[in-house]
Image: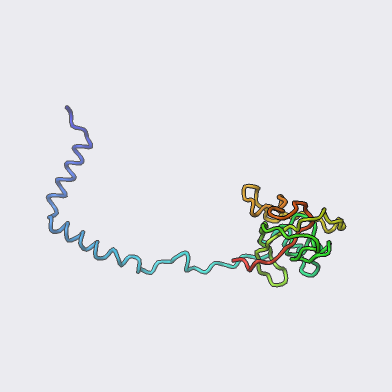
Length: 186
């Protein structure tokens, strides 16, 4: 059987290495490498985490809703807390921004959204809760909001505003929706 070129080359390189080095020399180099290896993390290396990142331009990261949001009138669809609401505002139906009108019952479950307050520039987690038990409120058309800022698809139901959330109440009749602050985001 003929010997291949790679076998001949591999044998020649191995014999030359064996003739020019000793076992003690190889063991000494391996020991030195093992002793020095733990010091490599201490070398002055530019780390990506330590480098200061430039602050992003806040206007460039805002959504359309966040650019138009206002913080004075909670009975308008462009009020900052309504960034992910879908329904009639309870503030137009005898309730408040976070309270249900008399004769209705708040749903024990809610969907959530993260909205940016234009007054302080901070983002807050908002819980949107449907008020149930009476027929839909006869509020003006300006109080019927469907803002879907950063809305998630239906495979994430806790972030979807397309579901009537009157589960666990005495009546599943939808009346209006509230927007309560849970806390500051991030």
